[in-house]
Length: 245
Image (cartoon, rainbow, N blue to C red; front, side, top):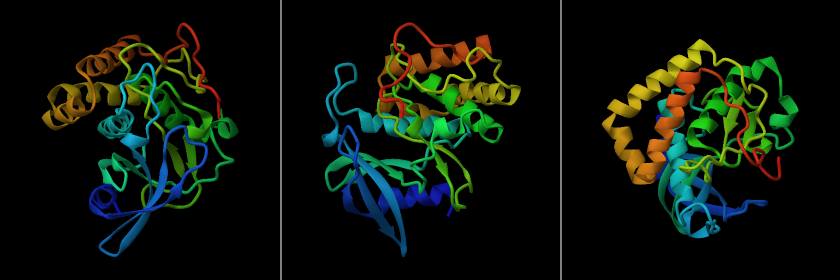
């Protein structure tokens, strides 16, 4: 199945809740999505299960999950598993393809490995763009099995607390801080800037998910990357999430 096929299935398939996922700060369900004889597992995060936060508007975390997926795809990086926004048994929420992975393998276990250098650099740039306030080590998954999507690779998950208009970047991935951004990734960023300006579908989608100040902040952060051409360094205040894994 291609990514588009997964998106169609996640959007229109029959959704059956299998149970709550442990260790989540919000209500997060493992679900089975069935349609046209195909079944996949997915992660369902309903809006009504979101824990109130003082700095993010209530009921917006699932919207931010979907917005992060859209931007990852618009960059051409496909770092985030196929994600949709839809109605489910507990109301509207994000539904994301579940990635089979070893929970003992996460960023801290392969930090510095050259095989993952480019993918990690893309995650770092994406996190800066979307102002990710919670890039834990365990939010970087290593898919061990050969999947029909991409084979062995890294995936980035959990993007509910992103896109704040004020600087809130908190991440465990600082190994590239201050280094030049590779030309190929700069080209991707430049193309994405043109896409943001000229793609009416993406513009409309983001306007339904984020506030105007939040969208403008994405554009400003993108301009910063293209102007400075280096990976960002830790900002003022706390720049690591807690817990780190």
